[in-house]
Length: 505
Image 1: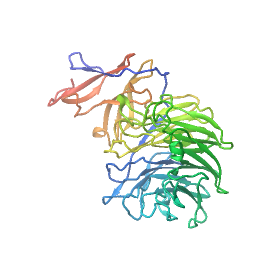
Image 2: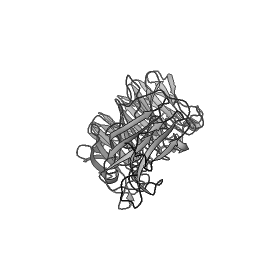
Image 3: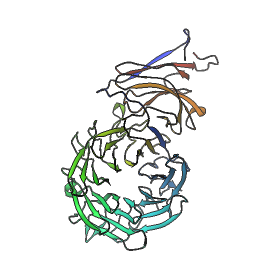
Image 4: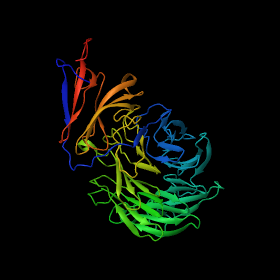
């Protein structure tokens, strides 16, 4: 778009001086941002506290959803292939602060959903995802239960539910409970480590692969933490994976491909609470690797969440800061499960302070789902979830934007077309995109973006339309962007002054 010489054209310099240059990269990853659907927008509902994904289904928890001013919780079901909303599942038998949806596991067309805040020790529910029908409710089985449903896992043959505050023989160490799928009313088997101690929080996390279960006890041994591997067939403990210092090992766990990943968000390798992921061999307990973020730093909390496939390990770092030091914006990291090499850093579009991106993660093939329950696009802490696909391949490519992507900085809006784009030698970019959808002004809009702060994710600089804080008028469009080495992004802005009915200046 050319601006006439006599026009009032403004050039706005927006930029920041940043550190080490990154290699030039291009975009192939599709990024889709999911929001709570089918229910009214509700402040503080925390959509994205937990996320789960299968080849057919995406399920996102919203544990603080209120119904008639009672915080009972809900989950939202989407189609994995199309990302289309399918249905809501509301917590049955209303009780306040049940936090239904704080834990989720999918197997086939069924989902197991935890509600550890239910009175009398907590509970969990089994649902049919195709119909939304409730199939079974698991109530806390013993008097010593108090947070039953904190973590859950569903397999073709077993139902697994944890309670990290379970008390047995006057010792509040936690417990994990296993039900056979053919008899859901049976008294469950109870799994407790041989060296369990009061306050361990055994069962704060769990993961199942085949007949193997790994669970976390993040406060074991004065907060050093540990994880334990059990055989689900014999219900026997196989080995222990111990943390050190006060790294809270076992805050998250994942098992896949014969490897056990143990999240230790309190590790201090790159500063206090920078975090790390300990990678062990399942068959012999040997420590294989310590996974660290390339840009790890103070309070990043790498390893707060984990997900694993045969090829990939995904670790959340909900404390990772955004541009300008905005704390707890969050990130997720994708590692090669064999080499331990970091493949990608994933940042949610438009992330900002207290989004807590990566508080939970899920992986399936080349898809990664990241929960951001503190994000504010719809209202304060309404939350979101972001799907990245694909995340790895022969070429390590980083997303900038593509048709159909969620529009960073705007809710319920997608990018539908792009204007000129520029990139400098440190992979920072600037571009203009046309957006559409309910979140766009009048159903369509033009937005200027720049990745000056982080090369992987563009941030909204300005959008067309009225109400822009820099102008007492209406922005009508943008010219070709420019970028220098600093990096600083420059946009020409066309606007119509307030009250003017004439042509754009």
